[in-house]
Amino acid sequence: MKAVVVKKPGGPEQLQFQEFSMPKPEKGEILIKVKASAINRTDIVSREGKSGYMANPILGIEVAGEVVEKGAGVNIESGTRVMGLVNGGGYAEYAVMPADRAMKIPDTLSFEEAAAIPEVFLTAYQTLFWLGGLTDEDTVLIHAGGSGVGTAAIQLSKKLTKATILTTAGSQEKLDFCRSLGADICINYKEQAFDEEVLRATTNLGADVILDFIGASYWERNLKSIKTDGRWVLIGILGGTVVEKVNLMELLIKRVQLKGTLLTPRDDVYKKELTEEFVSRVMPLFLENEIRPIVDRVFPFAEIQKAHEHMEANRNVGKIILKVNE
Image (cartoon, rainbow, N blue to C red; front, side, top):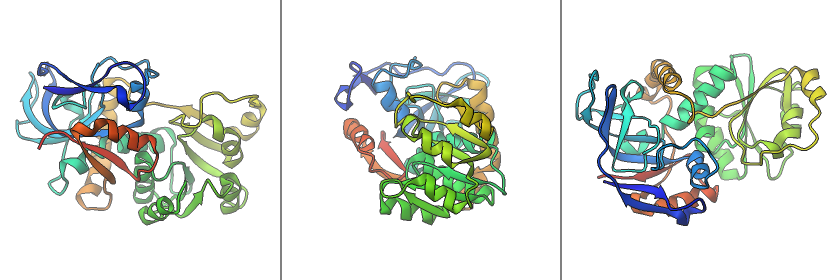
């Protein structure tokens, strides 16, 4: 089968196709003919050799496709349309997935739409509810509102709570789209000081929950933006990893709960439990068209390098998808 590997750590030009033997599903696993995969920031970090947790030589952490074979103890039938997280190997014509994290694809969704769900919606769900403890009375600040996780987080906040939703993005197009998904207040971080806007919107109290994709460059402004006893969840480091001269007293005075998380290196049990709760609580909303996957652009499998370049240009609204098999 054809799959994508990294020749050596570096830019998109290091992505190349290589022939692999077909993987075999072991006990509790399913083999999927991949119809679509998706590009994630963690794929770029892995491509650059910075992740430290990529065991599978094939990139890609989520797929949508058809079950073609099953291991012992699995009761999912061949031909079933499924989507979900894989432990690497998603940029390939076939991939193995633990059966207990496979989600059946609603009939109303294409494979490309389905591939836009697992990583970003599961990340947004765990960040908002398992770690952020978002409630109806809260105000949530979602950075990078036009990203895959951002668009998922806005929808989940809107449909599962009555929280007030604030979001940041870098263009009017992205802000307008965020508003269409349910964001109450949209802030252009290129033209406005987002911390001042957050305080203005919350009568100087700040946000109860912050979803932070940015990291170091937003440290001071996030600290100003968060409410006393607020939950600040760090899920990305697009703005750098090192914060100079941190005043820990500021965290203490506000009693900030600062949490860091990555979904990809989590263990199989965690991903199974997260998937099960997500399916129970959120999948009905997909079936009712109350929540929808956001697809920015679909690239042919052969254009994997262009797909990575598109993400790094930061112009996408929602998910960047790879069409793998017809």
